[in-house]
Image (cartoon, rainbow, N blue to C red):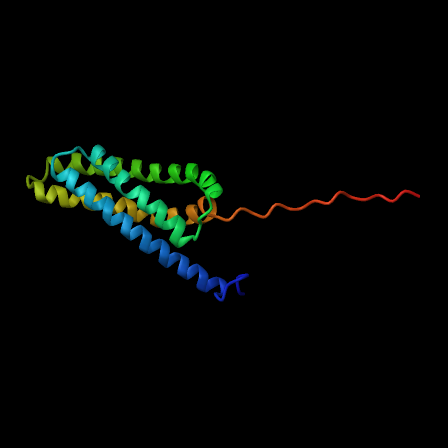
Length: 162
């Protein structure tokens, strides 16, 4: 099955979408991971390092996914997209903050090396985003960047008068 106005079949289109989403997520993930590791390394608590990392990666993630992966450019669509996008990424950030705080708490009594603490807590941060990766794709595709259904045009029923 070919998509209207496209030379791509539906399976090929979905594969390309998945690849673009993956690349966008990797770029945003690297930015977030570096921000988290740097903040944690200099002494920020995991919660604050997660907040900074979230802020550093959320905008590039949104722009890359919206424009490049899903090909959305309309201003009107942006209004409909922002709230569900924000909810999804904030939940992901909260999960990362909880996981990294738990890892930090557990590791502080077991590992003396700040380098290893940073590596392991940063790995926990990355792992949280890895776990959320597929779920976020489904939610972005179905709710955030989905093209709205064309409004059904209703024609008034005509009645014939005898």
